[in-house]
Image 1: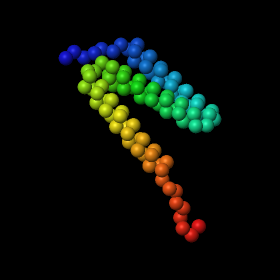
Image 2: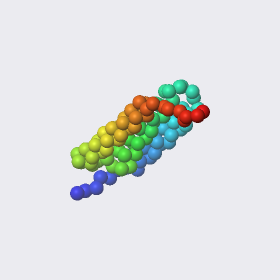
Image 3: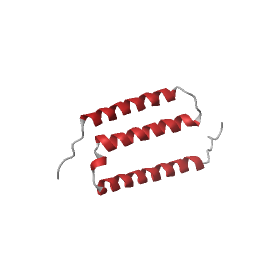
Image 4: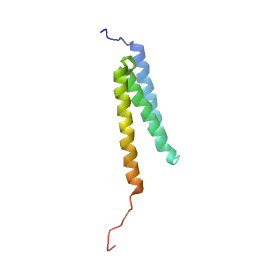
Length: 99
């Protein structure tokens, strides 16, 4: 099996995109957009993770099995996060007695 050769230009452009997204994430943290600030930061983090996985980890050039495993991991992560959020939101917050 021949290894895929990725050009240095692609690596450089990906690096620059990651730097730009990091700067944008930092700048958004200083702007008060309410709940949207966190959503935008998470979307930037998702974009950075996608860039890193697809280019630096060569997921773009792998076969279907690797992509299937990654899709399964993402689905499992979404299940765990949704269950955690559900537990947090449905908890009855009971204060300490005697206060």
